Length: 315
Ligand code: HEM
Image (cartoon, rainbow, N blue to C red; front, side, top):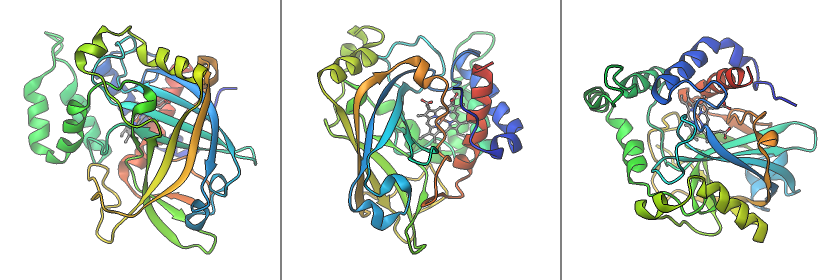
C-alpha cells in the first residue's frame, strides 16, 4: 500500500516542498521516478528492541522494551540514480518502526554529524549555487565559493562530506539524526537529545581506489551477503543536550562529552525488496507520544519536501 505524507504539514508547506524538490532536480538532474535525494538505496528488515534505560527517558511505545518490527532503507546521498556506490557521498539509514497500535515512527540518519544549512532559504541558496553552469554542465566553483564565504556554518558538514571515505558496508557506518528532538517521560519531564546509530560491527571504510574497483552496487551486494550469513545490527544512542547547546541549529555539532544513553538495538535479519520500501516515506517528523520535534527550521521543512518528492515519484 502506498503511504501518505505524514500530516497536513506537507499540504501547508507544499509550495516550499515543491520548490526544494525542483532545486534538487537542478543539481542532480530530473529523475521523476526516483527519490529527489538518496535516489539509490536498498531495503532491509528486522527488529528494534529498547534497552531498560530507554523508558526512563521517554514514554514512547517503541522505547518500553517490547520488540517492534523495523523496515529500513540504506542509501547513497545523491539524487542522481546510477552513480556507483564507490564514490564519496553521504549515506543514509532510514528506519521505520511499526508500533503495536498500527502507527509507525521514523528515524532518518545521515553519515554526517551536521547538516549543511540552518534554514530552508539557505537550502535553496545552496542548491542554486550547486546547480551546474548550463553552458558547460560543470559545477560553478565561484558560486559555491561565494555561498561558503557567506555561510561559514556550512563548512562542518561540507568538510565531513569531503573527508569521508567510501564505507566497506552500509553496516559499518555511523548514522546521525542531526536534529534535536525532545524525549518526554511518563511524568512529562522533557529531555532534549540528538540520536545516533552506532554500527555494532564498528566503522570500516575503503580507500577510494578500492571502492572504485568494486562492482557499482557493491554496498547493496555486500549487505545481501552479510544478511545471508547473519544479522547486521546497530545501537541507538540518545546524546543529551548540555545547558548551552544549540537546539535549533543542525549545522552545529555538540561537544563529544555530553551524556549518552544507549536506548535500543536494531537487528536487521533480511533484505527487503524495492516493492517493500519504495512505497514508503521515511519522515523524521513522524514521531509518536513520548518524542517531540524541536523547532529546528530544517527539521520542520523536511516533511513537505519528502511529501513533494513522494508525490512526484508515485506519479
Ligand atoms: C531542508 C533540508 C532537506 C531537504 C529539502 C531534504 C530533501 C529530501 C528528499 C526530497 C528526499 C527524498 C524523499 C522521498 O522521496 O521519500 C530525502 C531523503 C533523505 N534525506 Fe533529506 N532533506 C533534507 C535534510 C536532510 C537531513 C538533515 C538529513 C539527515 C538526517 C537527511 C537525510 C535523508 C535521508 C537518509 C534520506 C533517504 C530516505 C529514504 O531512504 O527514503 N535529509 N531528503
